[in-house]
Structures are given as structure tokens and as C-alpha cells.
Amino acid sequence: MRLEELKKGFWGYKKECVFQYITDLDESCNQKLRERDDRAAQAEQRAQARIQALEQENSALREELYGLRNQRDEISAAILEARASAETMKAETRAREEAARDAIRRNLEEDLLELERYREKISDLRIVVRRTLEELDGQAEELERQVQVLSEALPEGNLALFQ
Image 1 (tube, one colour):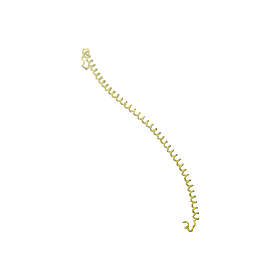
Image 2 (cartoon, rainbow, N blue to C red):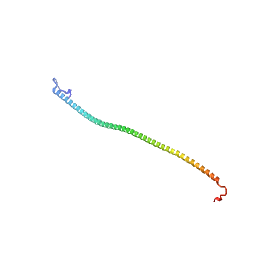
Image 3 (cartoon, helix red, strand yellow):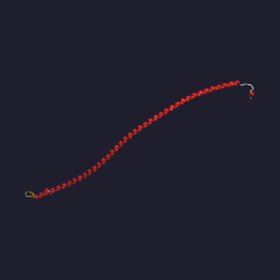
Image 4 (cartoon, rainbow, N blue to C red):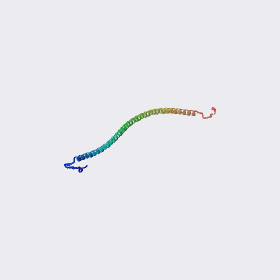
């Protein structure tokens, strides 16, 4: 009902019509409020569903972030461990190289000492050989001189007598 449809009486609008009009307006307002409340409830349900979905997504992303942080920490720890291992290996390698150099140096010194002993023995042997050769040369000269003396003392004539 509209305000124009209200019936008029002698003193203005009829009470029944006014009450009817107010009741119709009240029902109309209540209907609109119910519809608005229904729409609001539906919007709230959609919002709650969206909130729940976002919370689940947030939770999943937090778990993923936690996993990625753990991986980052593990990678960092692995890198640090690899560096420490590399430093240890370098130190061990340097120690082995130094030990090998020392061993080679000792062996070389021992070999040089042995070579020096051989050189001394060879020098001594040369002296002995030289003396022996000088003695043999002296003996050979003496034998040559004796052969010369004997060959001069040989008779030059008839050697038939000595047969």
C-alpha cells in the first residue's frame, strides 16, 4: 500500500488504513532487512571460506618457508664443512709434501755421502794403481836392463857347443 491509497475520513486518514500502512511498511522493511541479512550472511560465509583458504595457503607457505630455511641452513653447513675439509686436506697435503721433501733431501744427502766415499776410494785406488804401475815400470826397466846385460854377455860365435 502506498500513502496515496490510504482512505481518508472526516478528520484525516482512517486509523485502520494507517495501521495497515505501517504494518505493510514494517513487513516490507523486515523483508528487506532479512534479504540484506541473508546477503550479509552469505558474504560472511564466503569471507570465512576465503579466510580459511588463505589461512591454509599461509600455513602451507609457512611450511614451505620452514623447509627452505632448513635447506638453506643445511647448504650453509655443508659449505662450511666442505671448506673445513678442504683446509684439512690442504694441511695434510702440505705435511705430506714436506715429509716427502725431507725424505728426498735425506736420501740425496745419504747418496752424496756415499758418492763421496766412492770418490775417496777411487782416489785411493788410483794412487795404489799408480804406485803399482810405477813399481811394475821400475821392474820392467830392471828386467830390460838385465836382458840387455845378458844379451851383451852372449857369445857371438858358434853356438853349436851349447846343444
